[in-house]
Length: 492
Image 1 (cartoon, rainbow, N blue to C red):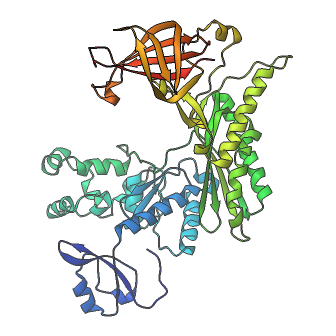
Image 2: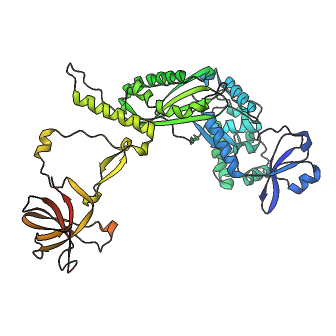
Image 3: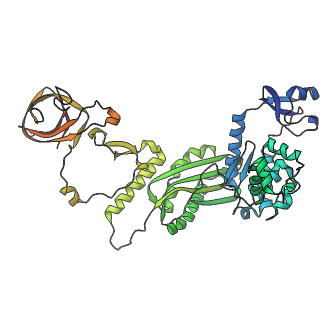
């Protein structure tokens, strides 16, 4: 909850069971006698000067998500703890801040400077940290000290439902330590397994898995600065340094970068994220850094003195296998051209946008006009080009020019399955001298419906040497008594 400089104390209320009740309030001597759960009318009777604001759950969650994103400067593993807290898994990160105590001190200092009132605690388990944060006096628990520190805390520290806490209180259990050594079978028989499960989680005897808000990247490289950097050239040099740090890790794993994310943490708490992709797995630091050059231009106007970046983090969010190329004394011209094409696609996609640079790709269908589609070049899988011998050995069965839509013609043909003998197309008559076919292509009933017609394709040649691709739409007397004819393409 943000601190307010106004004198009037602030309370938050919401409608609970058809009554306006207080859900939160700031710490103030003027709010003596006012507590969470109290009706708003009783609170106003105690202090008529209180300022009341209705709770906005969506705004609270949006603010909590922003704080979670900001807390990624300490660890990438950040998850929500209900509607009013965060879990930060700082395993392997505390030494970057000279220990857990220094990390908590830095975190508290930064949040308080932004106007937040926070409570922090650090322990070996999420359950113990949650209880110490809300009910304990110790901020940093030493290893394997959960049992001792939790012993005197109330049962609410186990994150139990109110009904379970009230039931345990009636039996004389007041603190978490009262549950130590109690026979488990009677508790399970009366309250179920939730109480003992929460206790085991807090003591570290049962695992508690945290679900981070964002997936953890495969590789992360980070650079921190004592003083925020503002100059564009400094930022580009830092990006290149982070890419160079990532290359050895990619080599050891036999991977190449396909998608990476650059996170820039501003000194004033704001966060900028730039994501870029490559059409082919990359392991070249300069090429990886060059992908961000075009994207950084959009942030140039907001680089102001005093609001620079104090942390830059490069995350490899998607990688693909990449084998090392065999080095020879003879340069492969074809390989160089392929790499140049991939580099051009990457730069254009970074500058213009992923959806603006598209290529033709094959589709899994046998309908000719649906066999290809346009999709982003970064989403296509690079394939090995066919050799000249492979191309020459293939028989061309499809026209070089395929019309977007088949064009209707008037044809005379042998029935029931003969090729056309003569047809009129675009006000010109054609006499067929050679024909090959038919090639039958059934309809896609799951798209076009079961009433769609079958196509019989013919490759034909007229007296003047024109070679066309025509088809009869519908089987004679089996699907329609009068099939129609169409021209669908032209051969070279």
